[in-house]
Length: 547
Image (cartoon, rainbow, N blue to C red; front, top):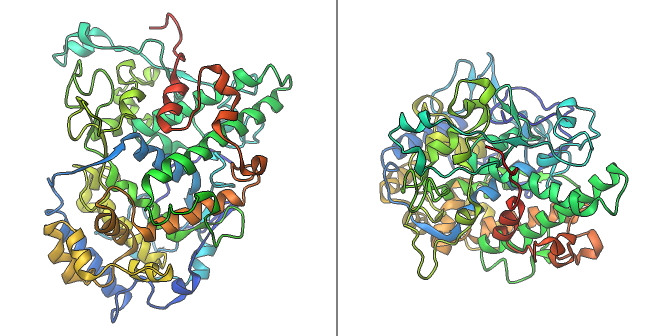
């Protein structure tokens, strides 16, 4: 499996042999309905026009609205992004064009030849749409096929010993860099000798390059690499064979990762109505290993867009009491510090993260609701799950030319339409839940969006992704995901793990716990939360004496 490139938006080409796992539907009968994703009494072209009109009308009302925080640290937003990348890497689509379409383009202005009104049936969608991950949730986004891969770019991720990840090193900016920006160089905190993901030739040298699309997820990917190397250090006295040692370390990292998802990440986000039973026992319709439901990847698990903040208490330089700025690291800056942006420098030989931009996981994993906390509102945690987005979020994640390419809001709505995802009300009924009423949908929307949503008919028939956000606001005050999305997410993730012979649900008869980890005796303690996991992963990993 070659490194995943990250260009997974709209590609007018069939799925190739590289896609080793497939997509499916939790509710194929609903997807087969001729009207799936189309407003009642409209043609496909009329539905598209309604969605376009709603997106255009939403631009001004969504600008500058105050965002509210969840009782959850910001790290969970980006852990969710990592998990999503580890589950789904879509290749192919069924949007037809008679001329080449630039990768990434799916917006309100149609490129020549793009026909949005043509919708394929369910069988055609599944035949033209594949998942590059051969085993979703098996950490292929981190490991690829391992050091014995047939792909040179995957083998190059590893040290010659065949056990450890090869790591990069951060760089230090010159004093001139700071004085040119009216910053006293003596005030700047440097994470001397801190590691970085390896980079070169304008790209991140990692298995899933989507994990370099912003600095936080990039640093999270690095933390998992560091964690793996620590696992190797503990296990290699027991395994003289490098291949055996690598497999044992990968298995251990995977167990920790799965355990955090089931016992920390999901319990903090899913609706209490789903958590009345242990997640490990949650029923699932999935019967084929590796199949990922489109209701999950196209709608339910895309709630994280709303959790993104405008600025973060990132480290000692950019955060509360920051030595450079006390207003935090901005979202725009975190997207600039990626390999394809050349780390804000044009010199290829310095393609490495500046050491004053190394993340402080102690800050980023703090709960924003703490007695006596000095954290300012807007810097401490994830944003509430609703239709209020952080400044620049609607265009920054997709393309800064929002008027040309369309916002992330419009792209999410169009994905649901083209992939025949039923409206949220129909998904709720499929789970035996009472769907939100039009009044509840209206109340869950920001005031400026209520009129456009009503005019487009979105209060009675709500596209699934939009319904997910409204349900979170209506049912859980934006602090958790609502019951419909929670059911989809729980049965997808539990189903994928239950069908994976190496997962935490199948290993050791499903009874594995972090207290059994050999890392526990290496100063880790019980790594039962994301905070404990990340702070342990990066502890004592800097190169002494490096500058």
